Amino acid sequence: MAKPRYQDAKGSGGANSIPVVELGGACIRVITGSHGGEIGPIADVAGGPTYLDVSLERGKVFEYPVSPTNTVLLYMLDGTALVGTQRNPYPVA
Image (cartoon, rainbow, N blue to C red; front, side, top):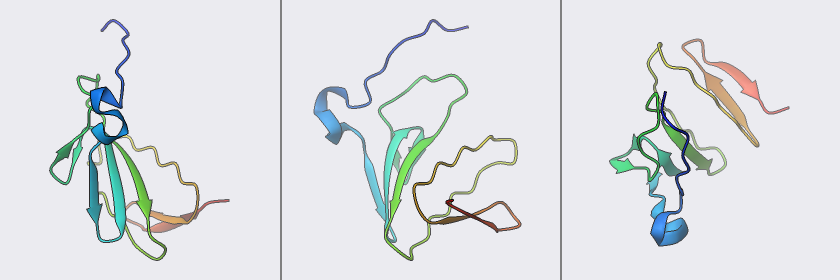
């Protein structure tokens, strides 16, 4: 087991150290892992997670395919998500 440690997500460059990918009406901040050719500032995390902070313009769509062996956590503030192969809607209550 690894010793617990803290990693500053902002790094020495402040908030600008978190890379942003703009794609089809989506603003994607890459915290850890990679997306769209960008690599997040948090590294060497057990399990190799990907943590994306995604903001969408109204009516836009963000698709992110994942392996069936991965565990996914989706936290939404507003809107509806279509999740999985069945594309069942999950609205924010």
